[in-house]
Length: 189
Image (cartoon, rainbow, N blue to C red; front, side, top):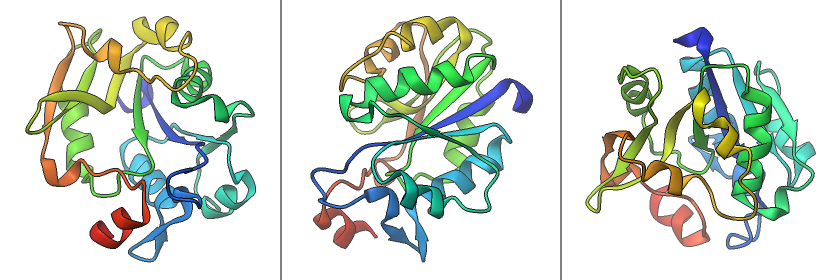
């Protein structure tokens, strides 16, 4: 699957709740953005990173990594817009794994578990415990790209993941943390 898989890291937002770019927050002496890119490269050589806010500083954080850094000039429109932009660059791949740069606690094993689910034309999402909410990281097949490229604004792909054909892999509660505020940094990093 490695050659048929693109990984799309969403890292374009302005981090308004944090007040500074969370992409550049450090965890284990490494920017969250660089950490997520290195994880992605463990899974596939086809890594695409959607950047926007603090583009130059984020590029510096990715220095030396063989990733495709994409500047999304309309990043302020929200996550849906970033997904659509990113998918337009991964459209030649059979599958795209979408991940976020602000979830540093998700272990590599969880991403591998998503990739180990075999279903050519199915979505495979993370099932957040204990509420069993389906969300990214998730794998989308090429058949879903047209819908993903229509996303706009701040709504992501969650509506797609509610499809009855969407398979899922449990993501333990301890790993579901998004780094959004200074309190999150103090508590989890």
